[in-house]
Length: 202
Length: 240
Image 1 (cartoon, each protein chain N blue to C red):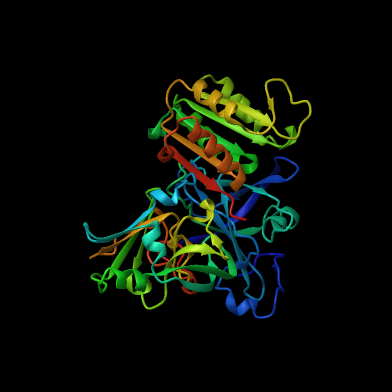
Image 2: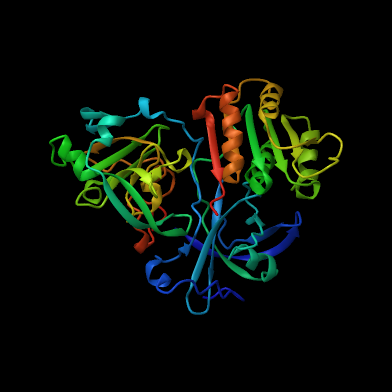
């Protein structure tokens, strides 16, 4: 049923409607949303650890991680708070290339991303491999600013953007789908914007 | 997500840019102070717009909920509320959301709450709940607004402070040449954060910061510089 008197804002560039998932609107800025203060992480102190369960598989420092193959990815991103931003340009290390450097095949169906501030988010492993996700180090040609997740953030652009964990410092394979920070606080375990999976039971 | 159609029962202007919308809900769903709800507007052709707003009312069982909505000039949903919505209208509301930026009576205190502009709204819910529950938990609100007219809920907050049961408030105005007595002038700075921390009867269990992203970043940085453990700081930033 329609809301009395509501028409909504229309228009926008050609093709906007097809690229916007249901309930989203196009935002030109880049809003910042995070659950706590912005951690300031020095690259000389930064490291990234790949774990299988509790067992560390490999650890990279900033220089080692930057020496991995760098890939560019330009994608539309969709925040659960209903803004979307088109054509965001990222550069970083594909999760495929991280696994290749560690000489492993994905050992479990689920993955938990970990961040410096204690944040976690769960993503099925299949959504991280096959060219679908990266650990981004640069945004629009420059280092990612701290408020947007720098030095490094996960980028899983086909899921709501809370899955693209800021200040990432590791990926952990898990046997079960273990819920992350927002997933434990009412948000959907998978978060597909095209199926509008915002909240737990959507 | 459960959605229901709330009926607007009252609209109260709180400042030149903020109004409170009171809704009667068919099914009252209990919530926690600090939570928000989504409102969903639907056009005749099915086009939808959805935004989240903090709940200003205290968790209670009267079946009403109060949302304080700030009018954003280039917004799509907030101008609709300010220009079109009338008492009697039905608006689709989600169940309460958010398990992070919340205060429960059993959380007690001391708590420091830092609000910028309409970022004070979740703290109004917390302060109201504390009073309703008869909790004497120490709670200090550091409230920054532009002018005296932007000090939302100031009279009610003053009354809550006057109860003398743990709620305290410090306010500052950033665009007021001559602030009223007892209210500071200028942007929130290191001194104000240090002063607020010193005014609490003990180390805060938690610091809540709500407002625009630059406001939150600034306040959080000052708190960290003052020695607050970052893990104790919870933030809520306006998305757009």
